[in-house]
Length: 630
View 1 (tube, rainbow, N blue to C red):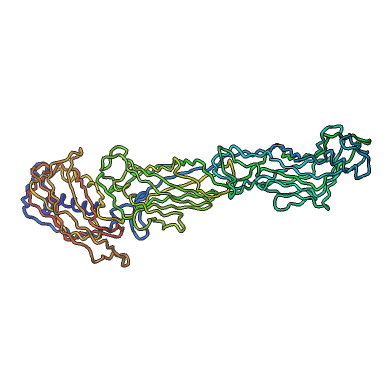
View 2: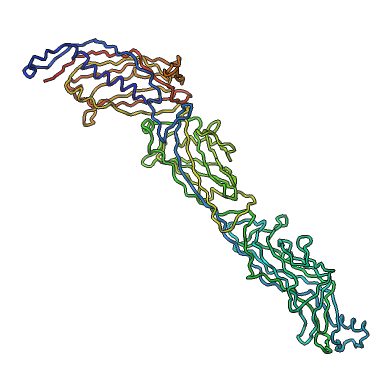
């Protein structure tokens, strides 16, 4: 991050060491230089050269923005790393069976003693205990009442803990009345029924009642036409309804799932039929004989086509397995130079991880937990471990909308796009900064193994449908920091070998300047010289007095096109010394490599308009320089 500053000092110093004096004289070009020994030695002990001042060197000139390190509109630097995820929510189909059910009367409508009394009342001679003579076309009657448990079940229930309602595609239920006499020879047939009522199970939702019938109290079918239903044995279907719902009463503990089934009690499944009178007549066309044990009655058949109720959607509580596919967050790739050194430490005041999920088509809310693991792929962290783990507390994502969840450390979450209005959850996570204090190779985002669940609330879903959710997550690290932040800049000058190869020198070179700094980091410089093969040369550098004190964080302002200094810079005199003990070292130097530690000694932030400025740059030579131009 100090490239312009130190390259300016180092390149200028080394070149001036050998060339400032060599070209101050005149050479007469009439001489044949091939015949002249062009080896010159100049004693320059104590020679000082003033080189002037630099322009303002803005932090924006030092730190380049890229896809990893960016700046806000106000110039604040921040680090961003992203990953993606997706998951499906699917509740498997369940099976509803409604098998044919036959409802017999609790007691026969007509028994021997009923017919005996009605024949006697009609003046027909009868003897009790003897066979009763029933004249042709004689009409008899009796009351009817019957109860039966319908053969209805809900099975293969998975991914559901409780069912409140099942919305059905309209399904017809046919109610058919048939005669149920004790023997075929007893040809007594039903002619009409008076005040017939059919009581359906209360959990069945009824719509589209057959003409002539009305539905009362939600489950009672009553025939309207004066209460008299004229029966036609050739058209035994007396009524039909359509079912559109199964509604279970949670206050009565209905709808609980046990062993993959929804258990309903006999009372809940009961269907009942009553009739004030059912009229029979002798249809034999001749006198019939009724024995003492003979009886005549009716039976109600309840039938559903194919014995299946087709489900549209279910309202209930669900627990499908949700296992997202998560992309890990690659941290180490594409980091800028100043964040790549192993000694870098990030001590940010409010590092933040933002989860985003578009749940606009998802009909359920989500409870989310997670595990973040920082991984050093080919090494360990300072504590000797290859990983660091942070558990994320439960957060909530709501159905039918875009959701944002922030996990952060500090006073508030950081989002360079601005905190999202109505973010579903904001969670202060005290140790989340531990994951990036030492930058890992990658962050593993684990949301599997029951860490994402449907909220324990009632929702309505279509069974068998895959509800897909795309999600993403971002790590935001603003360069608002506390004491302990450390970034390291490693760089080198361009090759200087062609400029220095003809020079040799012994002695000391000093480069001095006054550094005016507003960047709130202390700059500590390390130097080495290398030859054309990259081997370090034994040039002794002393940078003990090249520590630039941290600035106050102030920034320049623009006055037209001119950068206006803040006026509150921190000034530090700096000096870099190079000692050359071997006269051939200078000619062997190819590049100068520098290592700059930038340390935070307090809380502040990095902004692109903070700056450095060097004034009074001076070069002082305590050396004898030899130039060999043969």
